[in-house]
Amino acid sequence: MNPTKLFRVLGWTVLAVLPVLAGGADDFAPFPSGENAALVKKTCTECHSANIVLSTQFDEALARRQYKLFVGDPDSEEGQKVIKYLTTVLGIK
View 1 (spheres, rainbow, N blue to C red):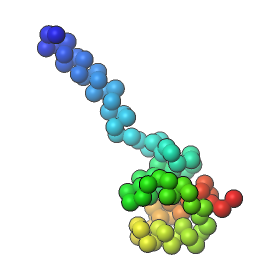
View 2 (cartoon, rainbow, N blue to C red):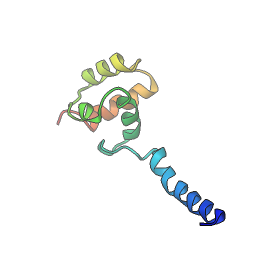
View 3 (cartoon, rainbow, N blue to C red):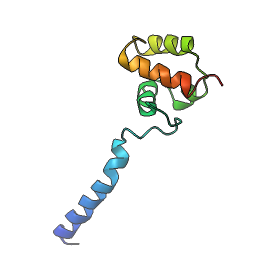
View 4 (cartoon, rainbow, N blue to C red):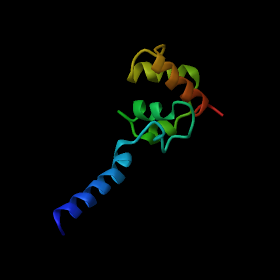
C-alpha cells in the first residue's frame, strides 16, 4: 500500500474511533437517562462499579451521606446535581 493511501486510511480510522474513546456529555450508559446522568457516572464510577450505584435506592439523607463520604461537600454545585439525580432517577420508588 502506498504511503498516501495508508495515511488516508489511518486518518479515517482515527476519526471514526475518537468519539468512542472520548465519550461525551451524553455518554451515561448504563445509568438511566436524566439530567446530570453523565456527571453522576463520572463522579461515582471513579471509585465504584456502576452496578454498586445502580443497585441502591437513594433518599436525600443517604445520597448526601454517600456524597460527603466519597466526594466532598454535598452542598457544592456538583454535589447538589449528583444528589438530585440520585434521589429522583435512582430514588426510592
